[in-house]
Image 1 (cartoon, rainbow, N blue to C red):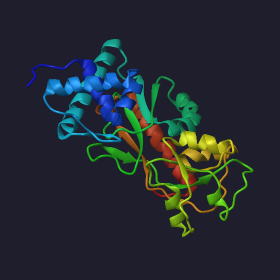
Image 2 (image 1 turned 60 degrees about the vertical axis):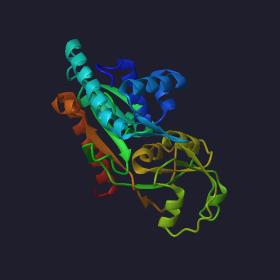
Image 3 (image 1 turned 30 degrees about the horizontal axis):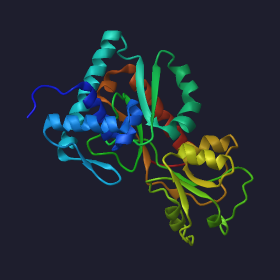
Length: 296
């Protein structure tokens, strides 16, 4: 069994691969080749004397050793980050915020001027993820996660409860009778699907071909340009609807299985800037719920 610490680069590569459950995703994050990521993981596994991942045909899966080691590695990186901030004097003014791309573009971005006006001394470092991690994202002070239910190991606070529905470009000609003849888009690996939306209203559904994407940002952009219809939910769709870039062609709205959750890191609990941003997020989400007449 190896003694001492493995190289820091191997640990960062392990954390990125575990966060994405993909060597390709880790390679993209770290600006490395997929083969370099694979080799570093093999080196780390050799150093530890046991595998960290099960290599499945289409995805990675953490082994028991990987599940045990991952929070240790993340805690170590957080400790390094806190120490670096203390040395550089950035102890509470710079808040690391992680959320998915669609929320950042369509909900957070239009509201940020309000936060800046209320908290001009708080600097935000905004980081977007396509796939939320199972645990608290590395280096995040505040994370807004879109999920059915985060892992029990994460302290998560549900921010909203809302509905999803089809959207399309203004003037796009579609009826319920012709819907299945049109290009239909949805975000992959979610319960908010076309089939579930149809089932929720007892709409006959013949399982037409559905084009999936990894982010609502892509499917909504396609719909906005008249390329078809996509499913979207209140939080990410309302701003584009208000701007006249999307419309809701049908009345039925289905209850969303997923929700947005607020997750704070331990260091955020001691950061006035992070707490100010978290409280602002809570207030903005609560105001949205009130305007829509929804109950959490």
